Image (tube, rainbow, N blue to C red; front, top):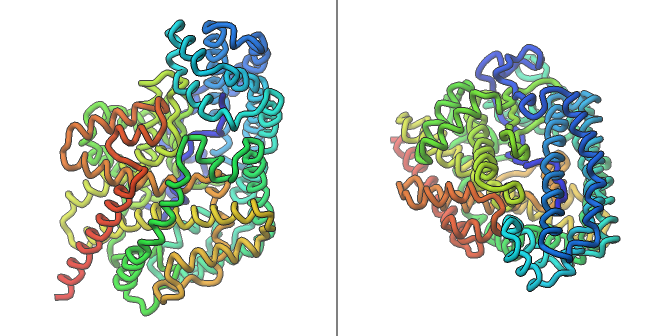
Length: 628
């Protein structure tokens, strides 16, 4: 019934630039004030309490066997079994989140790494113990299921789940096959886990000497910081050193990623799907045409992306735009810095169209330590929101450096957090976890509201130009870059399915080909320097089984929805909050349609391209005015 995912993930990518206070530079976690650290004691007060809860779960797993072979007897037996499975799943998620988030505080800490590994093994055991459930349900025909639902009203909460099982009947194995598939989860995350430890804790990141003589170790957080510095020669040096170091380990990264592809192919074959893409998308009943259409639409609109790149070239006043120029500040002299407190104030103001109840919960997230704010030694890079602890509240991990992008990241993760909070509050546990396909809608929606607020409150043309540029950066990073990743991911899976070997060098060549196409390298739009071919090797998203395309589809959906809310459409606002409160009560395509956007057509993408061109029109007018 459950695949026991590691967490509700939200990766905006790596965090970005600059410090705004001494706290954002403090890397010793023990010296970071408590108010800026999340409070995991809300989940379990102590490690000992976690251990007792874990032992209790392990002791109870065998009780599932009383239902084996009896689910067809009556509605009460089916209900009893599903209730037990969901109670175990809820407790497992709580145990898993506590161990993993503690491990994320310092990936070098072997104690919490061991706890994380231990609970994952228990998850595999739990999955194997419940392997009989879906095959037994599949033996029931729809008429029997409907009669059970009619006889036992408490089963209604499982209606969508039961419908989804019957929908996937052709892809569910026998009890023995399902047990093997469940047991395979013991190995399934190996490639991802090795990648995470290697890239976060043990990779020998290079050290560079900056123009001021300071030496900096370019780990992922430092690379994100220094790739955006104004000094062009420094950016060039940073990119060459960082990706050059990754290139030296392309063989290791290649073996890891290929191992992950083989895992995807195992599940594809075990589930009897014709491709890994169909296997991944069918989990949420997403037509594969949605994926293909996204790639096709983006490729058909690369001229719009190239217009943005030409605008960036103009604003940077460079003769030739390079890949290492893509994160440089667009407007010189505008270095937007925000303390965490300033970011919270701006975010709260921007979210006011969503109503007082939404704002009240947001304040609690800030004041009651739902957020782990600053980077520290060994801390997991990037950012995410975890809403899987149903009875507590969501949590957010950040690596806040004080720039506008960091404030936008906080708004982004808060969108996920509110989505989880409202779904957990309004849905019973079986329907609380929202589908991955809609996961990035709330996050990018919040980003759109934040930038709209900032543009309304700032009159300085240079700053407005910078913020409009930041919006274009969001489209670049979320629509075009993520679709670039999606196309690369599709192609490596297709090659693996054909039996082609994928070494680090082969992955380099393919990534270079896709990237040069997107950035117009051969057309003289943007030079994709040779070292960029190794960029794939530090992208964690390639281990998430066709996850990244959903950033792009969600962005286009949120662009359409946010336009309605910002226009003051109260009915649209109500529909949107209802969408956030819906969890997985329906299939994602249907959830979005109820909210007011149809993802099976091209309209959301077309609207996003029109808005992108409008923003570029505004920027060009400001630039022309400045020349006068």
